[in-house]
Length: 636
Image 1: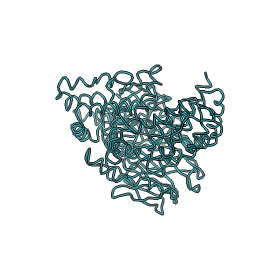
Image 2: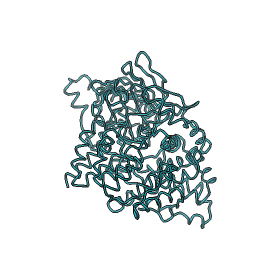
Image 3: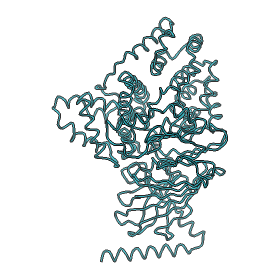
Image 4: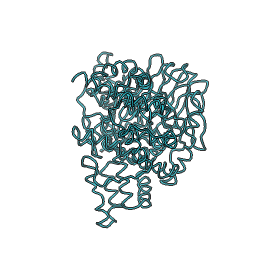
């Protein structure tokens, strides 16, 4: 009887939909575009999806890329599982124009929730208990937040346009109507049509070269969350780096990129030695134009990378190790919500550090750990008074943009939490625990409380009271600031750089060229960070003339130098600062320099002027961050 009742209910609902489809266009539009007060009710505060009721399991995506109009025309077919025989499935959209929705091939109604600044809108699609597939035909907005459309002159080759996406944290909903929560995983396939002289790539199985039709087919057989959906279209070429690794870049940049990333295959083998088989088939990199807002994005099978790490000497390839490590921590085992970001990023920084130690030695890894400490210390000092809870590992981002949680806390406090566990139980036991953890939760999502329960059951409960007393889990995860048990890192190279900075501060004496000739880039960073905020024009001129800091090919060094330029209004280096701010889109570099310029009444107009020139080259992630800083200054 129950099955018969459900079947009859499905017929009634479907008949209602068919009747509705016969109404005139104005009535249909009014009904389908009805705006509801829909708020997230799931455990994820950043998604309207209700996966406990009905969830997507597979996406078949068809996209046409229109560079002239800066639009994606799409059809998204979703296989769904109606777990509780509900009459609606909820998805997330932001700025997408819905053109038609069907359920199992028949027109169906849909409702849109009230727009929210951070979350976009809920898209509620009417289904029956028997519905197996829904189709959404749609078009993106020209200013969709995930999409960066670049004209030909904004690329390396200057001849053909470029498009790339950035879906993390909740921007996938601006180019695909989807259940946009890291706690929901699905497989996908896609067909993408692009101009015939361009190559399309996705976070999936990829082609190695262009075809004559401009039509590309993709498959991702492993389930992923929506934030790992990725697309790039441009004049791209490929070069293999090893059996399972390679790099894509614009032709003029390909040789440099291949040389820079030559050790990628070695990194992959080292990673597998530690934590088990790489489960994604290939690991390739794509070097994006400089407007990319991050250092890298761990899209499975195809890491998106900033060209700012192409230093010419492989000195910044820790970023590659980081994104590769995400293939285990993040992509394989994923934070359930953005409140649990440290489970992605803290674990990945730890794994990255271990990879770099295996390849470059303990001294090199210790310097990277010290940079993590300096970043963490600076972040805590900035947030501890205004937002002390933002210094917890477990975050509370309800009602906020999840980007607010992307800070050194998740990355570096999380890293030191694992370092502390390593100190307690030894590296061998921690590695055994992590290998088991990655295998146990493979292709699943996990929140902080689930991890802590697993940690106790599989490690801490077997320790003595004295051993367990060496770490206060509550202090690390749920309390503010830097825990007292933070591991201390020692490094002779760090001490040497700090001593050189002290000598310059106290006696105005510079380290010798012979001395700095042996420095790693991290020592330059230590040295420049340790210098006083206030320096004279004469001191800055001496530093620049002696060490040619304004001409550095290492963007980490150049960034630290330009902070001093901004703080001290050192006008001789303003051309280099302007060039940097107008050609680099990486938010990590942009925000601190703009912050310094905006804080000074004498340079805030300069900051605004540079931003107006630069913003067409910035992705929305960076553009919105800087715009927010400028508005805050103007309002105060």
